[in-house]
Length: 293
Length: 330
Image 1 (tube, rainbow over the protein chains, first blue to last red):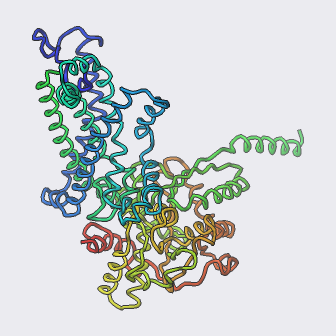
Image 2 (image 1 turned 45 degrees about the horizontal axis):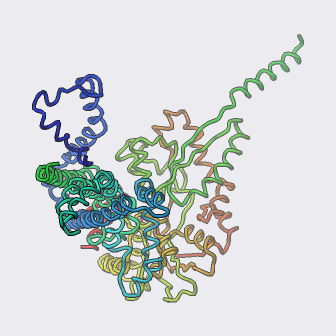
């Protein structure tokens, strides 16, 4: 099955009309499990997020509106969400290729490459930021060649995008990998024997099966990028209106003890992220239905 | 038992009990980034002094980070017995937002509770290729200036105000000073969030022609990299950056450490404390100690934050939301 089962119920379950949510399950006691689950989610997620929203309403509404729609805030949303989208899209393509290579081929050092994919998860993001900056700065390993043709990477939006791509890569690889591994090679062989070209096989057979997990990977990678702070502040240059991400603006507000202002910007990000994730989930649901899971 | 014996036993018992009550006291000193080395040395010295005086040992824990962030951490519940920040503007919030200290905290210790000072100087590349001598040179067209963001860094606020003070002295009006600072920040390609970050950008990434920085950070950078890489340029006039300290009354009282905490800060003003301060490239207040370090701290014409009406006024006016610094970028 696809990794999207993380988010949606198994289709078999959904199709079983009888007592759809009171089946025997591994966890004892539906009530107990639900109660514990709700409590845990409340303490860890809902209450802090609610507190964030409540905090932002400490100021009068017109002032709140000014804070979240001021030109500098708008510029920062554009950069944060724009770079996150580009990063997630890049990861969608290249993550698929990485997963493909890891699943379909054997080569020396494969296990090492497989382990390296997870590094962006494990590394403190500040360390990643410093390393990326060192490489992409005008005097860095890679940056120096781009500097020759007058392209700046570090301290521009390109640098921000690279950082956000870096931290998001494992999400796509790790969601697509198991699905790819489950795809039977025989299906492709059958397609080939029936006269399908390689492209047709990919388009009709492989891609539909991968789509839900690709979307999940994309959503996770995107969501992760939006909240990223540590790696970006080092590489972005933090110039107002140009390379300032929203999380930095939030830090700036906190630095001035403007808790309400910081919470207001945080709530905007929360809202945007929620809407985007919801849209992606709907898309996923739709693709799931269309391809019959 | 005769009297002498009695006294002997009594003294013995007293000594024993004194030994038994000799305890280890814990203090938490919450400070900002560049003071790490200074307080490591100072804590050892103070422990020795305190042990000789009372028999107790003092174990001082240090916490470092951006000055503003540290201030917020203390307000949010980091149980600091004392704070030693980069500017009074970062201590005021402990009263304003946390009610952890009295409003007049600055009058509790000599020299407005700032036992050492520093100033803002320039760090340039070896040989000073852009011939940077003074603040005027920073607004020239082909000069790139590195400074952290005044919104997130205490050091950067001093940088900004130093430039402003120079311009006002030279050009006369606040309006002209604002124009000057605006053109200076036009030359800034990267705004790091803290002082150490800016040093890295300048030194490791090779970006910019001049770094505006604390005098003590400049000394450290020269020591670290060697005088064949960077050199210090002292401008004609700069700001007297006073690093403020105070006991955090509410927490110290709760821990029962007020007396030690107070002594810990007072000891900074003694000859020994001042010597350690000077050794770590901060300017000592004690004139004799300062003189002993002679040419290490060059004479600069220094103005103070009072030119700006103190931090209580300067902070919101220049660095608050919609303040002058924000206008520079609009």
